[in-house]
Amino acid sequence: MEVKTFDFKKISNSSGNLVFLEANKDIPFDVKRVYYIYGVNNNDRRGFHAHKSLQQALICIHGSCKIMLDDGTAKVDIELKDPSHGLFVGNAMWREMYDFSPDAVLLVLASEYYDEGDYIRDYDEFIRYIKETN
Ligand code: TYD
Image (cartoon, rainbow, N blue to C red; front, top):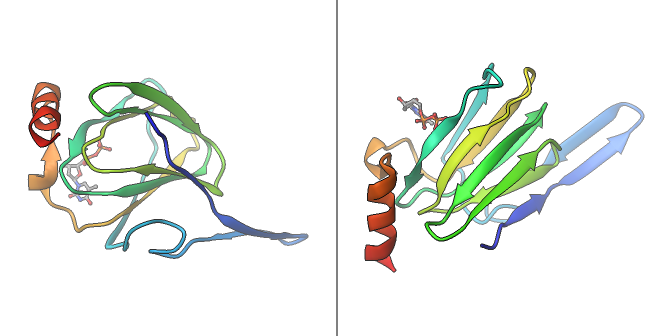
């Protein structure tokens, strides 16, 4: 499976670091929604869903966490720990997030407004969806 990651531009000097990204330039979609996840216990796992249309960029802006991506054929685990590094999660991709450090803040940029109808929350349904749409 091809994993798409981003190395965002960073301006660093003696007063710290500034990272920036622009929609449709540094990530391949318009950003309609931003959310962030933090305060996750190290033993907890989140996600367990895919999206029919939504595209996302995940950036662990503080601390670290791991992301498991599953396209229905292959699985990969990616560690996010660099605030200038992003992970693209396209549509039809099962994801699980785990191994959050206590200080982890996972920022998510999303291509669409929240829509529960876009979620596939059942793994067997996800596999059926992949087969139907390919
Ligand atoms: P969910 O996407 O399932 O989170 P995770 O995959 O990290 O476990 O969302 C958790 C809950 O929050 C769910 O009830 C839907 C709600 N939610 C919104 O209302 N708006 C949003 O933008 C997001 C991302 C979630």
